[in-house]
Image 1 (cartoon, rainbow, N blue to C red):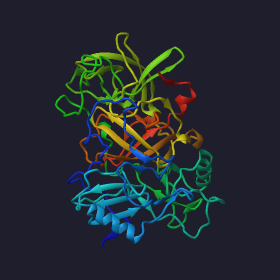
Image 2: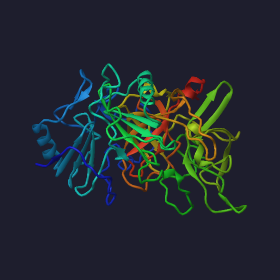
Image 3: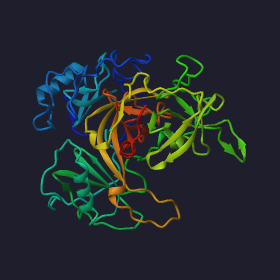
Image 4: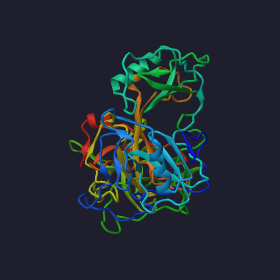
Length: 461
């Protein structure tokens, strides 16, 4: 019996991973009413510990009382090897990777309440990016905090701010990622500050601290963000149907939106940007549809499903820090939040502190279909200054806040372009943010927090 505890290399995309039974590749059905939607989890905890409907393990690796995972016992590993015909099992809680050439017919999202991925035997997968981690932590130094933090919970804003404040006494921070059970600090290299080996704090509230030092983000690694690619008319997409021409003669979250044709040398090309529709929002008498800001870089006109289709509105407000823009619909266009393909109907915006590590969400965009997302942590990101502008430190309390998610349902490079902008919703209709892809392997995604919009009075229509 071979059991490994950590895979040290990055994803190999020679063949795709096996797709969970609740993913769009298994079920491309049309939108269902909330009462018709099957529950995906037999037990639904706030945070970690929820069990997927196909999780048949006769044990739980999650302990509700201590709010922590435990390592599987030998007999429990034996059960996994036998049940899933596994060749190897990698356990790095809260993640489990099972390599098998005979996956189960109904593939679960969890085993014993822990997150699980089923992959072919020769596929190498690393659940968390390696980053460019440096040997700066000093294990002999005392803890930054006097009280322990829960190992598998995201610290409160107040706790996060205190950790950032203490770290800033010693390091320049570009971003910090609270990813239970660890903290990743991205060091700002612009100022040229140098650090010695084993010189920096290694723990905060008992949670391990690692330091990433590189020009690129911890999340990007060697990959590129999928949404940077221009979509051309010859590219294959999952669903670029014209929902204004066909039933239901209205547009809704997740449908294909398009920019104007890209201009080169003052002339239009045959290329444009495609993204997924967001939500119909209101504040007082103002009503707008949210769209992905980066999908409309050179013009404010919004089309569906392509620039040769119908113009549906005009962007009036942009919020680059959230990668959001608000579009005023043309008078003849109908938009409804009541239908979101195979994902839950969105009902309300939530703030980032309402999201717990281990909460499950769904997203459904025109280019990918429905995907499952498990909230894994929270990031605080210092704003980037435009080139040529003097760098002015921004207080950490004003940094951008994001939620990081493990993404399930699709691993590979061909399914992600265009899903950006689609709302991320849980089974209760809570909207955590709008989708943005980070990792080219399809393992991780993020949303910018909606606190600013929720606190400013914006709500769903």
